[in-house]
Length: 478
Image 1 (tube, rainbow, N blue to C red):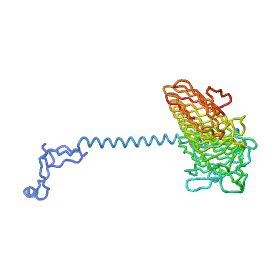
Image 2 (cartoon, rainbow, N blue to C red):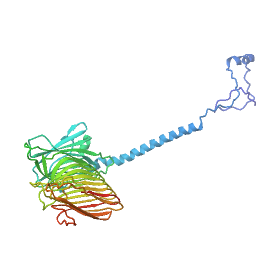
Image 3 (cartoon, helix red, strand yellow):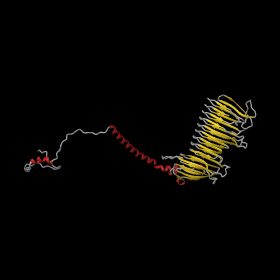
Image 4 (spheres, helix red, strand yellow):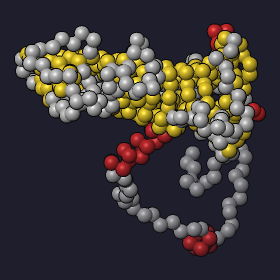
C-alpha cells in the first residue's frame, strides 16, 4: 500500500486494523482540489532557503588569552592559599593567649632581687599623656645604696640624673618613669617594682618578658627615667649620696651639672650600646662603663675613676684630687677601636696645694691616643701608662712633671720634645733632661734640681711615663 507524503500518520501507539475487502471504502472527498492548491500560498508561511555560508570566527590574540588565563590561575591560587593559610594560622594562634600570659609572667622579680616593696603592672597605675604613660616612685636618699636595673628583652631608653629645685623632702629621691610609644594592652606585659635587695639598699627594677615564644611581635619597650635629687638650702655643702648604681643595657645616661651641689661616695653607671655623658659630676669612687658607644663630658673624683667602653671614643676632661701621697689617686681610660682624646688634671687636696700621688692609664687599639695632663701639682708623683696600636700615641705633661720616660714603637719614630721653662714653683731651680736609645725606642728623664747636673741623675722616687704603639709615631711632650 502506498501512503502519500501528506497523509497524516497514525498516533503513536495506535494499532491499524488489516484491510477487509468486504468493507466498502468511504465516500470520496467532495471538496474542490483546486482551492486547496490555491490556498497553499495564502495560508501557509513562506520559507526562503538561504544557502549556507562560511562561519565567521571572532577570536582574541593568543597573548591576550594567555594573560587572562594566567590572571585567573593566580586568583585561584591566591584564594586557595588564603583559605589554607587562614586555617593554619587559626590552628597556630589557638593557644596564643595562654602562651602570651605565660611569657608575660616572666616579667616579674625573682627571689634573688630581694624583698619586693611594690610592683605595678597594668594600665590602672599609670598616668596617660598621649601615647606615653608615666609613674613616680620614691627612694630614701640616706639609704646605703640606691640602684636601678632592667631585666628582660626588648628594652631601651634614657636615664637622666638631675637635681630639682625643691628644698623640701630632702631625704627623698624621686624617680620618674615614662613608658613611651605605648598602648594600654602592652602595659600588662612589663612590671615596675620597688625593691630592697639588702637591708638599707633600695632600688627600682623594670621587668620585661625574658622570653617571647608566641608569634605576635613584641614591641620595643622604650623608657625615659629621670632621677631627681633634692637640693640643700645652703650652697656651702653638697648633697651627700652614699651610692648610686645603674645596670641598664641600651639606656643612654645623661648627668646634669651636679659639680659642687651633689657628692657621690660611689657612682657606678653601667650601660651597653648607648652613650654616657656628664656635664659635670663628682664621685669619690666612679665607674662608668658601656660598649659600642662613646663616653664624653667632665668627671671629677677624689679616689678612683674608671671610664670604659669599646668600639668608640673616650673624649673626656677629668679632674682628680689626691689627699694622701701614700695612697695614689687612680684614673683609667679604656676602649678599643676607638680614640682616646682626653685631658686629665691632677690636683693635690693638701692645704699647700703641693704633693700628691697619681696613677693614670690610657689603653686602646687600632685608634689614636692623645692623653694630656694640663695640670699636675708640684712635688707630686705621677705614674702614667698609655698604649695603642697602628695609630699615633701622644702624651703631654706640664713642667711640674719629674721622672723618667720610656717610648717605643715599630716602623716609625719615637720622639721626645722637651721645652721646659722656668721653675714652676718659683724657687729658681734648673731643669735636668737626658735621653738615649734608638730612633724607635727612647728612654730618659727630667728633673728639677737646685743646680744643673752634667751627669745622668737617678730618680728613685720620681714619676714614670710609659708609652707604646706600633706602626705609627710615638711622641712625648715634656
